[in-house]
Length: 518
Image 1: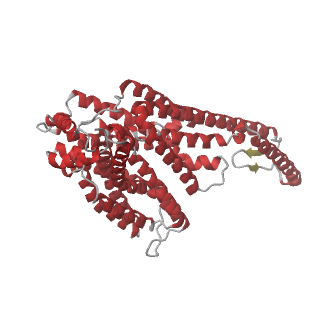
Image 2 (image 1 turned 180 degrees about the horizontal axis):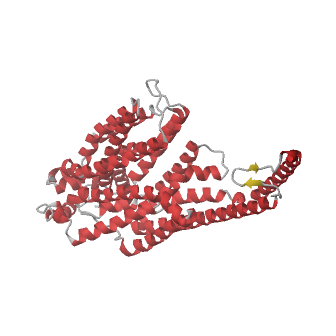
Image 3 (image 1 turned 30 degrees about the horizontal axis):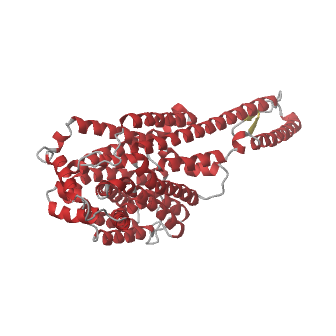
């Protein structure tokens, strides 16, 4: 007897609720990642703490606060691989509540730079651990038919965290936002009490009776769960007697690691970091009157909408096609944005040259020197008797310069970049929507689908550590590469990386849609 459609929908809904319960912990990760930008904006308006004293942070110190989280995340990812493999996905998420709440409490009561740095480092530990446990659970729990959709849930909840912290920043002080994080942690713990351990993990660790009970509930009374158990048992049994380092020497595992390293390289160098860093400037130069918080909120809402759409598309078109479509959209946006920047820079250079020529024409036989950048006039009189003559020359020069400036402003107002200031905004929004359809999440999904359950946590943690290092490298190379390649050249270079990503996706991504994972 086949399962009725209503019974199937109810069973899938249970899976959705359980994955969502685990992903509440990922919301906290989103809060932590965006917290610095919201906190710094608030500190610029009022840098007082919960105690009433002031904290003044330099630009360098702000950068340090932002960069210490990836350092903690690197250590957390390394520890997470072993912790998740030892005590399970659900168990790890429960224990993670302790450093999560601790970090938020430290940030809430911070009174100087040192305490903020400690809180941010503990934030990083949590992020590194949760990205291993949360994504593994989301891949292992669902039916094959809906695994792609539910595997995208962590990214969706991550972006929900972005929006929550931005909205909180509109009405709360920087240290009060920590209480939002604490509240989210409490809700997450309550949800985890009603969520089972991953059946795949239970089978891989020999707890098959527990796994059967959970699988019967998840797959339904008409499913042949013994086939699934046997498949998992076979794919993991030959790995238990081999050390993890020996497993890494297996050719198929090595090949998989290399493919994932390249995918994470594309993920970090696809331009996502560029637009995220520059989105406020892009909105400002477009002439919009929106503030930094509202601009960021619009961008992250676009990401959230795109990720919501991807829940329905990634399971139907597959991981490879999602990557190809996503990167193709990014190529178009980066080429358009680079062309806009090139045109703008070219017109600026042409105007600067015109200013220089007009300034040279306005020089008189007297030693009046016009400095273009500062608009200063240097005057070296040959003799004090001709002071009145010089003053008349200066007055004439100022009138000519004022006329030229007015003419230049008119020309600028009619220029192509000024008339098309909406182009970078559209590029930014379409870019974010396109990125959320594939490149922001497919590498993380495949990072868990490609490895057998027994080594999934450890192997995926290696790839995530590589991703963290690549992220740091991308941030550090951003400014030097713009200097070497020019801003427009840098955007085109990034478009080239996305183009190579399309080719690589076609050639090397092994599709996991509708396939069982070990």
